[in-house]
Image (cartoon, rainbow, N blue to C red; front, side):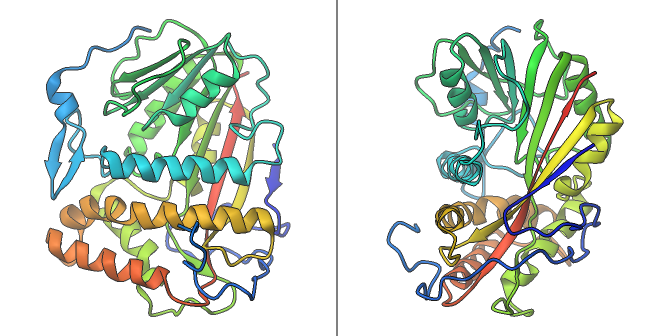
Length: 348
């Protein structure tokens, strides 16, 4: 079993912290002293399932659209959320731009069948289909994607992976990204088992998830700020909902428990804002700032209005909270970051 480290991460960083614990320190990311504000630069900012009209309409809750297939998943499925997910897609391409294949780290060279679970707007599935024209790529989600055109070898489908899988193919690669809070612990075990059963021998599972806690190395994030408390607020909401948001801390052990071997991981330190000196991290920070700015309301609204404390919040209370957090993101000299973890493993 191996583990790789992000640039600037020290050996010995713990990957087994529990939710609510402060992760062990990594090496400090150097700050670009010429950048005074996170917003300083202008550019900071199987068979196909048939889909009924009700699924296309979705459910409108507090001004956001959600899937009509399940009423327990926090993530919206509207244009603003797809914008957020696309920003996340570009963020991870930048962070892995020095890799042989920035789309995934699994050593899969010429896949024939690929599955993307939680495909969202389908961007990752479309990119993989473009890169491997001989492959058949399926992207599945609870809501229909916005894409009006996809490569001929890419099929975006609406389905619930908790139900029986109908794909006949044995996949070479199954990919998941930003699925935190999607399932209970029992449901996660079921999903990983289905992935294992539907991969060919030698095929890979790969998953990338972020840590919702925001941190800084230099004290620029005040301990009493809303951003400093953001992560724990939602870890607590998700715990009350029974669908934990600490997936990035637990997925490696659960993937191993499903039978995968040679499980490896890579820990990223993701800046929010263009404050790092390192050019790659500066670009990533600009993109991540947009990722957070567009995503805040969608990440917060469902959980706070269903599972907020000491009682569920109103939608207006959630919007005011999000606006105040967004204002904090604009503060000068804020050198903040969060962890993201990528895990991949092989079916024997």
